Amino acid sequence: MTDPRTTGHVLEPTVFELSHPGRSGYRLPELDVPSADLTEVLGASNLRSAPPELPELSEPEVVRHFTRLAEMNFHIDRAIYPLGSCTMKYNPKINEEMAGLPGFAGVHPEAAAGECQGAISLIYNLGRMLAEISGMDEVSLQPPAGASGELAGMLMVRAYLADQGNPRSKVIVPDTAHGTNPASLTLAGYESVEIPSGPDGRIDVQALVAAVDEETAAFMITNPNTLGVFENRIADIAEIVHGIGGVLYLDGANLNASLGVVRPGDVGFDVMHFNLHKTFSTPHGGGGPGSGPVGVKSFLADYLPSPVVRRDERKARGLEFDFDYDRPKSIGKVHAVYGNFLVAVKAYAYILTLGPKGLRRVAENAVLNANYLQTKLEPFFELPYGGLCQHEFVLSAARQKKQGVTALDVAKRLLDYGIHSPTAYFPLVVKEALMIEPTETESRASLDRFVDVMRAIAEESASSPELVTGAPTGTPVSRLDESRAARELDVAWGKS
Ligand SMILES: *Cc1c(COP(=O)(O)O)cnc(C)c1O
Image (cartoon, rainbow, N blue to C red; front, side, top):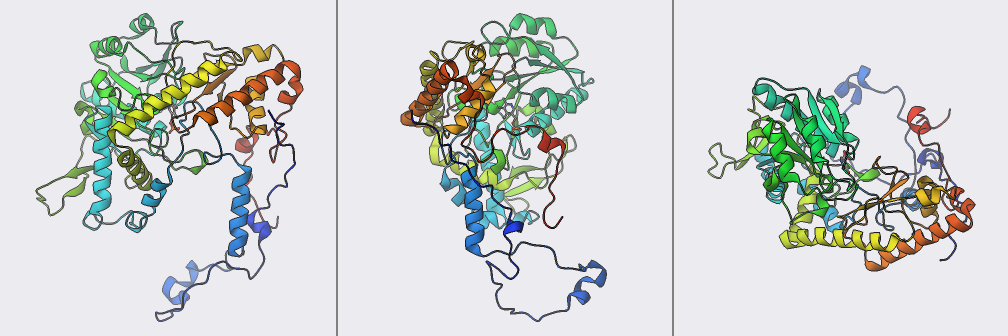
């Protein structure tokens, strides 16, 4: 293993600091319409008293600035990004090309349905594809994130149960649940009831039986769960939850493990969300925006966010595709217009590129890659929940902790080797957790390099722990105060 890079970097100035009066990267075309006096057109009170303070730069200055910034950062176009639960797979560039087509990129959000039948048909078709993939009956693409899909799902559960006479008061989650699950159900007005997992990392069915009662509105499950373990008793669980009149929710963030292999709707789930920015290769992290469509069985369809897209092949109203706003039982809107449309275009391109067989191979290779890594890394880190994993697995840095090195230190040291950290300290049931998800888009060589680096860090932890606890040294900045930027927001710039 070669030494990680140790050269210092100069912090990049802001575009405002780089600005020089008079520089420009763009020229407006010649005016080919009559000129008008702005005061007359807009009214004097609507005009600025001084021009806006915009940075003035040439095109190469702008390009170089953003290229330097991109080089300072980690992204999926640079190296493996094994951030567990986030499915940081490579985002194929054909998706971007399709989303850039003028007919999609240029469509106005308020365009009348008759003027954008192609765009609406894409929304309709993607919804049908997700329904087919998941075994759900209807899908709405409106929610802009997984968490938003969860909230929409919980609001639909509440509306449905209220229609039955009682919205009920509690929703059950396992102790391995993602933090958004209790947050979403709380926002929807429910109380969170957490049940412990069994020693194998799966839902403890006896604990579930003890927790359910006539106040249970729903049970939210992630499958495979956040330990990368497949919940194999869904049929029993569905019987228990349905037996008391509750609804079974699937957090579909981990769908990458089961695409084309098992359909949630076939095994008892009533409502679920998808994360297009995970499973379906649309960008996420700082690059978003995201998309968290929500799918339901037909008994919940009346409650879907409004509007829904309808197809009428006979074109009774003159249009084949149209938005249906006449939804008296709908939970209402969860996002402006119809969700993040261009994200839907990218996911649609991805699904069409791969086809049914390709999607199944995604899941197969994601699981194969994770098991390969798990086997190769087990000698160097503790593996609290062993056995075959799904698309991800959770190591513990407990052994390294005895040498004075924490999971956070390992995460930081990886940056020195040019690799993004796994998810650390989640799920909460594992001490010093390092949650690793390679995804299907990594080659054998890329996985092997990750193994070499992790082994090198385990060896450093034993022989010279200060190398690990002092990391990173090769990044533009070293360890930052992780919460200060959020608590003391300061976005001021310019001549202060
Ligand atoms: C990512 C994730 C979520 C939340 O999805 P967002 O799109 O980030 O809001 C929920 N549950 C699990 C298991 C996740 O991995």
